[in-house]
Image (cartoon, rainbow, N blue to C red):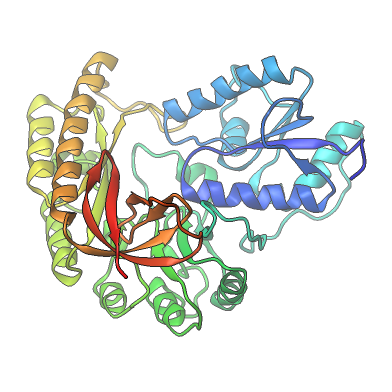
Length: 425
């Protein structure tokens, strides 16, 4: 390895889709001769694939850049992904970057970086086409788990969300290319694949050839090899009956769903421009629970959406308490640029209070799920001293087990968020 080889550090917070795309950026840079640095110290370039969903996510980017200035003051900063699109549309002087690479140019990331460091014009090559951006990598998370981004873009119009603007129209990885890469992943030793996307439930819609998540599920079950798979997050209105039926017969599918609700108040859902009512969501959850005994279901909920009255908040909290979901991801409402003024914004202290109440409910639901899971058989994917259960919770092994092995076990109790398990022999 040449002594003069430049080093880059990848900062990639946020969702699993963002993490999967971050690994594609890293692969492009490594193919171009750059060395990936395990830390920001001493790097020549920081690739910032920041998240733009909430104000807190953007604060995390600012914190990282402040630390970068301390540990690598001469490093250049390249914004990529959602974060680059956000800065292009809505500049943020608190988080300046040396380079913004828009999504349509991301396949040419190394060329943009080369032009930045050489202080020369970017070669006049054609930009990326409208085809799905895909870089086949084998970088796993937690040794045997792979985040596979197969879709991006969103055509929903949720009033609180900036992602539709920064991610653009629907785009999907063709099924034949997806399955080709799946075969290579299995040969490479990957044992669990997490499929993710901006709006995963719309996978295949743009291809106009009949591709869908239901068709994908059937194709995955026909593949040879020892592996399992799951979805990251699905909008509730995308979990159609035909998809549920296909998943119900899929033996490798992990019994886990994350189905964002956002509010349990019909009035708030309407102002959010969510196309369902709370009762519709409840019927879906009950149908999923019936079809998949022992399934774990999580949801997202926004605390303090503008105009949410005390009555509407109480109604939402009561609905969430009664709804048989097993955990809540609670998001204090964040005002996002480019979405216009939403009337009825409330003080930060009230948003924090409501979020705190919902987080207490989340803790109660998690504890109920842990108690109900005690005594049940499970299969853990070993990642050494820990394992990943089918319901996306973790267990501890004592002694540690070989990584990348499916281990039948019995959940005997809990140590915090980790299951205690007894191995079956």
